[in-house]
Length: 258
DNA sequence: AATATGTTCAACCGCGCTTTA
DNA sequence: CTAAAGCGCGGTTGAACATAT
Image 1: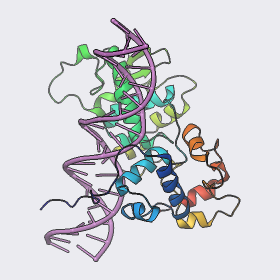
Image 2 (image 1 turned 120 degrees about the vertical axis):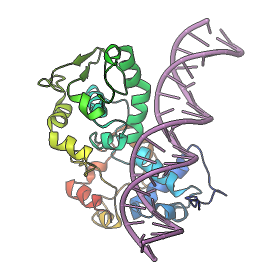
Image 3 (image 1 turned 120 degrees about the horizontal axis):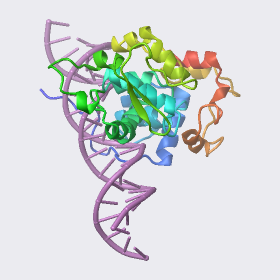
Image 4 (image 1 turned 45 degrees about the horizontal axis):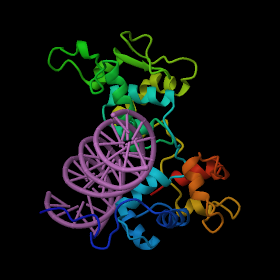
């Protein structure tokens, strides 16, 4: 039967996005919100696949994205959640506000994986390599994580923790990690595919209704207002580039996408 | 300075699940 | 109930950049 391609291949641009394309997409979403991705390219004047637009927005243009390397706490959290959830990057990302599944996946493959291997830890099973010859079926992500917790420090010093009582402790500066790690209900919800409980900073972006809640002083700056806005978005957090003008209610309203 | 090799990460692809008609 | 369409996920690719020779 075959599946119809998500978009017409003819005339659809691929490859890196230009600043002009970013501008069009950001302006469109700022005024119309996220909806009907297949229709976005046409409405926004882009020669792109709707899927590509969605990806560009979620992975790069979203205003609440953090930029830069994962912090020590975030990295530790990723390791622990990966031990429990496996390669379910979207679930892991749901516990790290401002981080995308793609970003975490990349960081895992380029940094964390190597660090774990360097320390003799299998990044797939989270078992130490010299103790992997276990009976068949004795190892699953969810099972082994609790009794084989791995901690990481800024000096790349890792250690495996064989106890369950000292689970996920990384010190005083790991509040986020500790909170999530000790929150069994959260981990259970992640495991059971329930909506994420931690990442309240973002579920979706502005809807038309949400933008209606913004008056002229609080609406997103347009490219006409500030042509350097997007570059700022890419380098700094939400507060840094002015999205803090959206108060909590605005953000909550913006999350309610049909 | 030139070239080779390694690393990073944005973007694409294809698949499965969910929703809709 | 069924098929098509939409959506989101995870794996993979390749261009750009960094480092080594």
